[in-house]
Image (cartoon, rainbow, N blue to C red):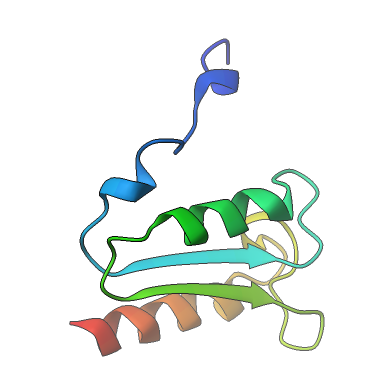
Length: 84
């Protein structure tokens, strides 16, 4: 886990030139909301970028939607199917 603090998409998202989806749970306590916003905002070369917040009402609000994975996986699968 020594490498974990160095993991970052800073300087990478600007290079993305394909559809790009960022998802984030409203109650995610591991990854700050600002990180999701920054990934979305800096993916300026993506022709189809999207940012999806999972809310209490729809489920999937925790980190990686671990408590309700179908909420996120269903949305992600539908999003990918729509883009390809």
